[in-house]
Picture 1 (cartoon, one colour):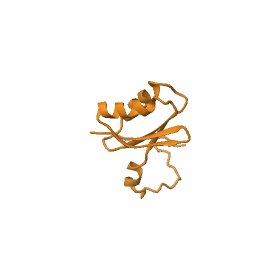
Picture 2 (cartoon, rainbow, N blue to C red):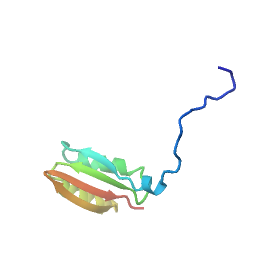
Picture 3 (cartoon, one colour):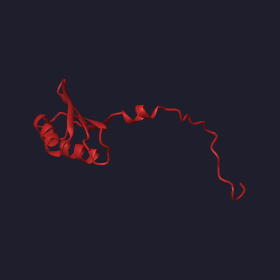
Length: 98
C-alpha cells in the first residue's frame, strides 16, 4: 500500500433514504423484569439525548409502571402518547417535549 492514499471502500451506499422515515423511528426500552423505579429511570436516561418530538417505547411488566410512567411524564413535561397492556406486558409510548 502506498503512503498518502486513503483506503476507499467499494461498498455502494444508498444515500437516498428518506430522512423523515429515520426521524420517526421509535426507540424501544425493554424493562421487563425490572421493578420500580428502574423502568422510569431507564426511560429518563434514554430520553435525555433525544430531540424534542422524538418518541420512545417502554416495555415493562412491573404493575407500578401504570402509575410511575404517567406521573414521570406529567412531572417532566413529556407526552404519554399511548399505553397498552399486551398480556401483562405494559407498553408505553412517550414523546419527548421541548
